[in-house]
Length: 236
Image 1 (spheres, rainbow, N blue to C red):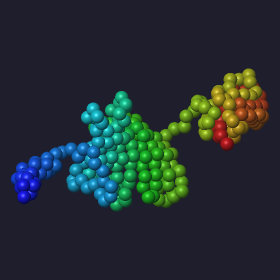
Image 2: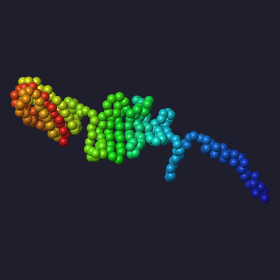
Image 3: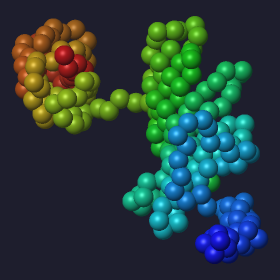
Image 4: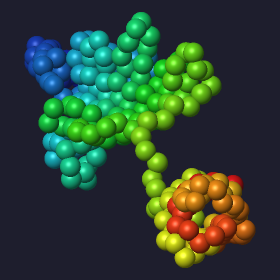
């Protein structure tokens, strides 16, 4: 009988337990920090809000935004400029477009590389904050499916390396010479295709390409008048 009474006396105070439980629930309901959690199945739903990820110092690294044009912004931890990456989905002419590009932190304006994707076409572009855009368009217009569209200028008289797919330039040859020999700054692994033209006076003269190799090419012509040699090198 004494043992049963002792057990009864040791039962926890239910009122105190309820108070503690209420405090824990209140903390969970009002806390803005999730802590370390996981979603093993199902979905994590944020109603009409953005998702922001910060590093240990409090600096923003990733932001997923809501709205008509939902976006994902990313900043590199060791970046020294104000640029950040933005991926955005938007509608134009009733069609979905997806754009990935570099923007400025200060005003969100594009300032760098850009990739534009749709079901009908794709663009690889560089758009500086001030200056002309350069791009390569694939199937740029519905009437020209399976076509390329370029905007910009070709680099001339500057071979960067032996992997240059296209290299062009102009050599001005003074009078007194009957040919021109060009040596590549970087020899190609295989002999490239050389396309050329020769202009100058007199209006009528003969010319030909007499040598091509991995290291250069030679063009000769009749007479010794001054000429311009325009060349286009295609790696193959």
